[in-house]
Amino acid sequence: MLEYDRLKEMVTAVEEDLTKAEGGNKAAGTRVRKAMQDIKQAAQQVRIKVLEQRSTD
Image 1 (tube, one colour):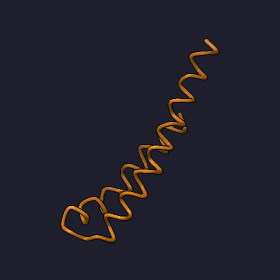
Image 2 (image 1 turned 30 degrees about the vertical axis):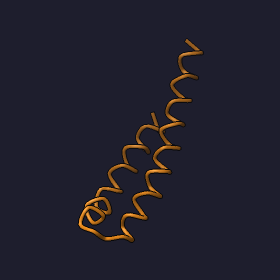
Image 3 (image 1 turned 180 degrees about the vertical axis):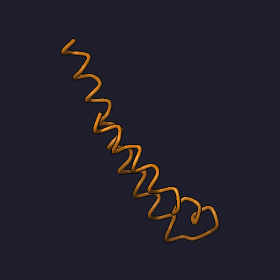
Image 4 (image 1 turned 120 degrees about the vertical axis):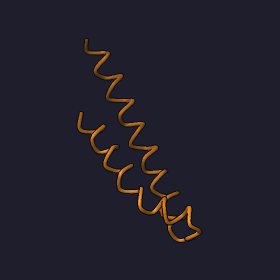
């Protein structure tokens, strides 16, 4: 599923900034929060696709 693959890529991409944010980098923390919002939206798209597939079965 394309949406799920995109979600995994987004989570992987935020890992470096998350490490920096844990070290006290405030700018990285801001980027992580933004990325988490985008990840939340991507996860919602995965949920929608799963429901669509279930409806067609």
